[in-house]
Image (tube, rainbow over all chains, first blue to last red; front, top):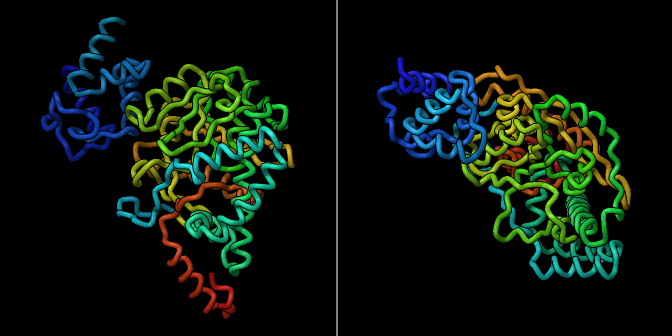
Length: 85
Length: 332
């Protein structure tokens, strides 16, 4: 399973999005607000699950702002950190 | 214990950071403090508060949300006296805050016996969430935290119309704490987590949420269900930072005391649902209840935190009293 697929599954499981399937989550749709509809409390969970499942840490606001745009940006963020480590 | 969060609730008034008085009134008091001292300012304040309590029913209404639940049934005279006392104390707290900035920190004594506890908690290296409320003079409390020699970050909303000056603004010095804007990107949660991961101090108000009911839980507080925010508890769980409940109260004419009411630890595996945080938020609400028991006229959250309408509470009390055969003449 590639990072994108496992990320979608983890998001559904950890962020209580059980009414969605991985296929229904669009790669370029915004994660917060419209799109996936996550909120600031979900952002806390997102930071934690990135560490728990992928071993990558969101160190500051700028990193988070860039990474938390969509599934695609989140996958790029994970891949970059995984390669670096 | 948990009320239905999903239902739309129109009873909960939205609070605003706008100041009650005009800019002129604020500047008048700053002038009086500078040239006449604190007691002169208190003296002017007593007349102004009397005017507000007698002729500005909107102010009384805001105070009533709390007073009604704290003191239950009271006659009109008692109600006005309670309003006067509460508003006067709020005014004094604001004057004291300005006194620190205008006349100097030495004009106010702040007693804090639990310094060692804070040092020990900071040594854990997970940062510290200082959770306070709109009680006493929280800015006096903040000014007393310098001994920790650790950066302090404050989650604070400043709106247009909020013309109160912070004590450091009076003194013309650099802010002793960095402000995190809760209306910023993702409500500031990324910045808050960054602060805690750096082992620094995050100061939040535990008794006020920003808008709507999302991100809040209905918790037992002073005989009703009141809404409390849960974001700090989620962040505490994610970072494993301890939450220190810290309140200040005016303990004398020139003195404030700071006390740790509780240390709340939220486990990292607490759960994924908002309701899983309920015991921890309830723990916080209990500390606030205990504070209002000890210092009933130093709780300054002038908006409706409760989800139950005052008239419904009044009605329930009426029915209860009828059953108990109590007289109705003290009806609120």
